[in-house]
Length: 499
Ligand SMILES: *Cc1c(COP(=O)(O)O)cnc(C)c1O
Image (cartoon, rainbow, N blue to C red; front, side):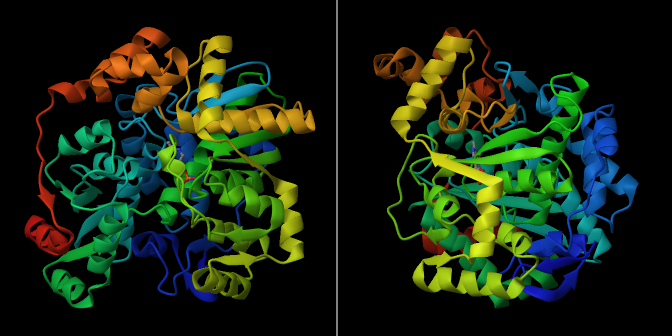
């Protein structure tokens, strides 16, 4: 399989190179030349396999320069019952006859980013061997919460790698901060920085851009890399669970062979829903992909009008992992939907960086409207949805999943479509206990609790479910990283860690 840059069709590299490089030097993202196809028989037979083996089959279609046993080793290490609490890895909860909740948050950090970040380190180390990069890889991450912890858990104690994460002092929740401060592993480092997320991200970018420093590290055998969500090695593992859950629904006789489904995804960077698009192009029968946003509704407008405009106010919401105005992975969709027209993508992306907006040609607008439905849901309705679902089904959802549920309800109210629908559930409700307790029991209950751990207990009492061990255990864990640095000292901190 050949990979191109979304901004340059003449660039041709293999999957291992794409994973090591992360981003193309022209600013584009790596994309496969064509999307591999699965027959319905092949999809059905995946249902007979365990999750790691399903993943091996699907990854093998994209990572054609990997040997089958290399991929198998990666999937076996990543998707274990110890790490995901359940052998099915991504269990499906049947909410009612029409709605299936695909729970993607049983991994070590309780959010769906584990689905990709548990396997990325293994794919990366194999890719390094293949491309002959005989160096230790050092991952640098700036995080606003979920990604940093998921990357730390994924890379911890992976031979040949080190990882360092910066987070803004005031910008993450107490639970997220504790998750990072108590991180275990011999090859990890964490530091808070005085400033906000942008400061942390800009500081990391400056280190990546510092050529002299990168050369210096290279000569001491260290290659800097990122675990950014635009890396192909993060996207391809996400395709697996959509194909897998279709096979699972057939196996459980919930749908018949070839029956169309809808897939509804709470969206930020357009990564998770793009993975659903790849699954559809591979042969999973999809009626509509439903793109759910919170009040940062730039994608809703784009899908409805064909105009992408990021010149708008950034809104802080109770579904913070979707508070994004630039959905980087959209670029990959534009490449495929335009018939691999890298020139068009390059022009649109230039327009975006110069004016903050672009408009796609009519032929792509038609395609977009054919494939997607889009709507958004603000905090008030998110809270209301959590409460309604708990009352009607005794099922507790996190705020990100509730955004998707609400948008799905809007879709059904508008279209009366009775197609069976998978809703991607992206976080454990316990990871956002404050908002969830408030939704179910009222704001007074949240105010009565003093710590995040009391909130866990409260939610446990309300839901009748035990909090994930990885969260409740934090209380007894030793704080290993309580350092805070100034933005200007980030390079020194990284350097001290690496040597
Ligand atoms: C990252 C994240 C999202 C958004 O996923 P994208 O791939 O960026 O669209 C949604 N929910 C949760 C809980 C997340 O952590």
